[in-house]
Image (cartoon, rainbow, N blue to C red; front, side):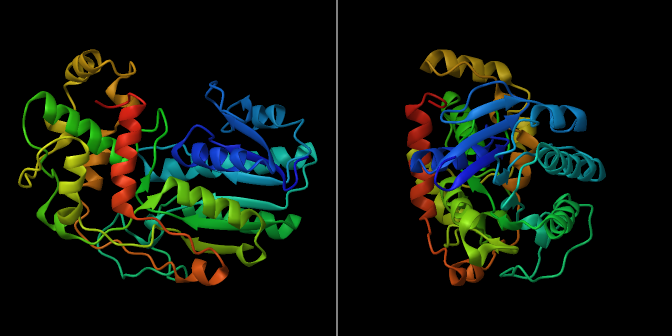
Length: 350
């Protein structure tokens, strides 16, 4: 066992899980295990391919993991039906916890992730800045049954947990289509191919709304802190970069990073305008020598349309986590432009 313990990361290929694995592996203080349906290896992680949605498969696949001390639960199963999404994601967590218990693992800590949906950010305007003590909103939202199950299980079996609430996560993970920045970059590639400026595609209200973002690297750092910090035990924390941004201010910088002129905003549906044109992306990939990908591997246009049309302030207070001892922050503008440069260097975008 490494100095800090043995961490199992579910969903290690995802936007959150990948960055957590990179962070923990770089420190060298954790033995790292991963579990997901995807077979691809994760650097520095001993990976197990299994379906956590299947209780028997989870029990069999995790049967030898008696040494696990920390669970980082970053697995997520999306579903267009919110009620079905609740059932699916509760099952993932419940099966994982039951399988580890059956294996004889003596958990010390579990990290769970939520987001601003916990405050109703997906429903419309809500009281800001949102605080962790705010009342829940009308569901179904899978966060709530997962959290309730985790609280009960932790109390019953004597381990600690932390719930982290990021928003608009900035990072990159292959095969993760819920990614605001990558959506903007692929949209920018379409604009470049057609020799048109990069125009903000959302509503006028969204262009001026105050929003927050969370660097995936920052969230990974908060995760590592929460895994061992006594002040994080059995608490819920908002985790954002620490600044607030408006697209009106950031769009020109994003366009510049993509090598495009920034045009005036033009409200349009990305699903309608580019969603039915995968052949153009294939032409872009070939013309620029990019990694061979299909658009659905990179972007969900309906989700991008939603994210670019949030016409109300989205602001969560981060006072609680700072007072508990985690004070890191990120400059969102620098994160946006830096990630564009990284994705270009890695040949994901032109």
